[in-house]
Length: 271
Ligand code: C2E
Ligand code: MG
Ligand code: MG
Ligand code: MG
Image (cartoon, rainbow, N blue to C red; front, top):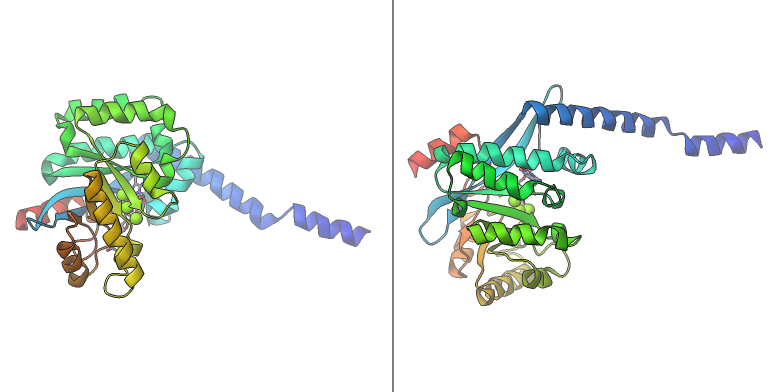
């Protein structure tokens, strides 16, 4: 009986799990402090206008300069920020800083918004405030929203999104094709642009099914009057295929990796 209890005890009390939750708690505290103190940096990834072959836009990608763990990528802390209810503050801080940087970058600015950020009580006001404070025309701002963000509680934020779009802000559907019922979203949410997930772009020249999906998405976008961006373009062959098939924009290591503001302004001068 005691042996059985011990086994049960082990099952219930797992010290490694306990460590994890302590670490999690600690990381959440650090995250909260980092947001308050602005210890994030933003890298900018160039977006190529395929027709004119110029860099016309930049996507802001957040990184966290962690005191001991080095430079962390969003995959390592955004989910935690979402769970801890901190991502709204984070996204709005990124937006504010990127809008300040825009005058050095030139061109349009793409900002990633979590679903939870759309639920932030003042998000619409904060977006407008950031633009007004830096005197940036709304047309220079895109908000990138992933499909998964579009599922829950749409009625709570749709009005705000429509209002911002009315001011000229553009809406991009990020990672398009990864979620289910992608097509239905196009009908329900006002969108200007779709970012086709890099998993499809990867298949160009290698996987006929990916190419077929890409063709269909580009055609569909045309029918809806939407512009298209291909993510994860890593070679000239992919860019060439996308050019021939009428895709509007390309983003990926072949165009340029995410880079510091300084590097980005340098690249802009070269272009
Ligand atoms: P995303 O918006 O789809 O961003 C593109 C990701 O793909 C970036 O990863 C970028 O570094 C990477 N990437 C770009 N070009 C290539 C390529 O040619 N090949 C490959 N293999 N990868 C490429 P990153 O920076 O780690 O960002 C990951 C995700 O985190 C982003 O995916 C975005 O959804 C999210 N994210 C980034 N910044 C923010 C933010 O400020 N707020 C929120 N809520 N999410 C953010
Ligand atoms: Mg994005
Ligand atoms: Mg994306
Ligand atoms: Mg993606």
